[in-house]
Length: 399
Image 1 (cartoon, rainbow, N blue to C red):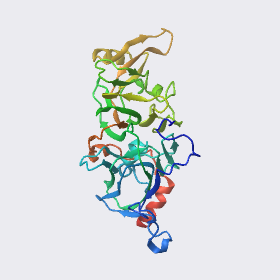
Image 2: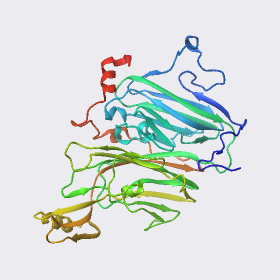
Image 3: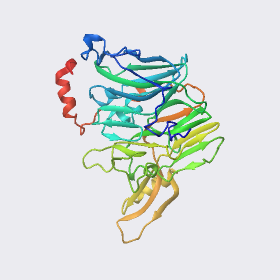
Image 4: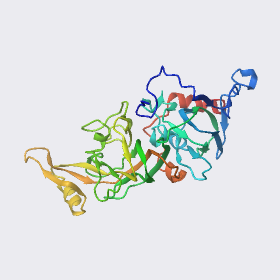
């Protein structure tokens, strides 16, 4: 049987009666056939639910085999620390530990609690407030999805899960989603996007958020390479990029953009600032599958560019004395120019990543640490709430 890059049949005209469509929402919490729209005579009786601070609810608990095809959520816009405080966990079978544990926004490709408009092959944030995922989520005997409210607020929450019941082939993997953050990263130590999941498996891709920390002399934060260590790679990887923006598919810096497989939805900076303070990017490895038999480790270097102006040669001396010069070190420039030298240097930033990995065997991932996930993300003075958020704040619980 011919299949596309997601393991799905590519012909939309094909009719396969082995797979039954079901949906779960507050209108039909069990996904039961013919079980939706029962309240208030079917006249939009239960489209949402009030989430209370600290509450954990079950969004879905269904028997398989089957596959989640589409996941949609929305909730009112709030400040960044509240937006990131809503998170979810996914359990396969009767596992007590989750195989997915991640802030909801990060799952949808929006790190740092700052939703923006974008669309990709697998995720989208329509108008920056309708959050969609078409990432396939196969399950065998059981799937349970739970939602946790660590926003400190009460609000109306909406969702719908579209899934099919039916057989999966023997080569299908289970989706594992791992969230990681280092605030700040360790100098000269590459940030780990994902590690510890055993194969056979496939690295589907990731999204990364960076809170760019101010550091003297740097004119650019994104020279670090993404590396993938596959199946026993030790000191050196099999897969190595050429720079952060290059991994995202752009070049010579990175502005806000989104494409099918890669992009940078969030580039936020204070007026007159030399570099942004908040950056996010994503990449999906769909036409270029990253398959591993035994082991996978994906990392990102923290290396930036330093342009030393004439009269500020002390910056270069300090970098070299501290052993922070990277690559080939500094290059001296023409004596009649405004710059004395240019070089790559090790730096530290606040980096987080959400990695999506299919594994043949169900495995646990580290559980989210909400305080660590929310730290240092408060709205800045130069950031304004959207008109929509401001209007909803006036409505309070009626929103």
